[in-house]
Image 1: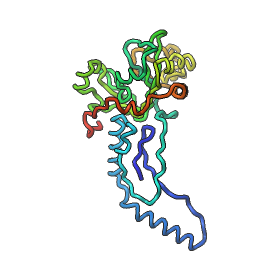
Image 2: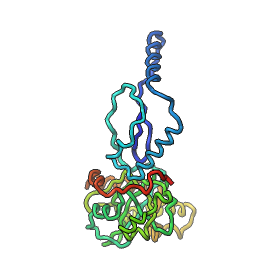
Image 3: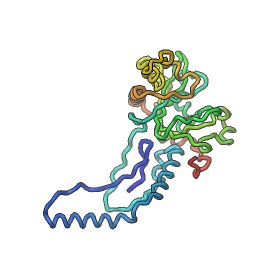
Image 4: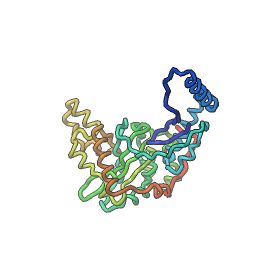
Length: 296
């Protein structure tokens, strides 16, 4: 029984065997003996307190960025039942049927399409945090939301989606910029609220390799975002323009159709241009949380 970190969630994995149907007394006795042996090797019964401890362990791991090299730090809380360990499974971060998805828009001023994605990642820290304005707390994002990361660009004006990650629900104090962070980056005076992310993936190359938000809105129109889709369904014609839905907002919630389309298009860009390697992301700045014991 191992504690695992996959796709922005955690799960317990149990290794077992297939069932047997038989009326042969000897076969039944062998199966009973086999089961009894496993039960004895299983150790003490699982307690709720253990599960609570594992929840806290995984939460801290995610809030610290969920780097793949740190998975071993989660520990093995199980008992050896004598089975061979299967090979590790590597799965993409984005979840096509996630309950929530947002486009998080970064950059006050439009950048050129020639801006390298790695330069933006290093400068803004979006591999681990997405910054929101100080004058409001980002309460709408829930654990497990897919966060598509977009940069304002010019020539023509657009937002290019160049990455995706799994978001965590905002927690006061844990997810507020520290005085030290503000001293290092004055922008954090105005953008001091964080949505922490983990399992981030970014397209290699430049912003030109990202997905155009204009293309999404041209394709889906009012069905691009949750708010415009809802307004269209309710007959509110004045509030169905997707290009007005994200103005003066740091993020916009996608509709289900928007999530599906954007996820497919970004994956195609990953396949074409490749991704920033996990090893490169692991070498970036990963400061400790303000308090590893403070989950909010």
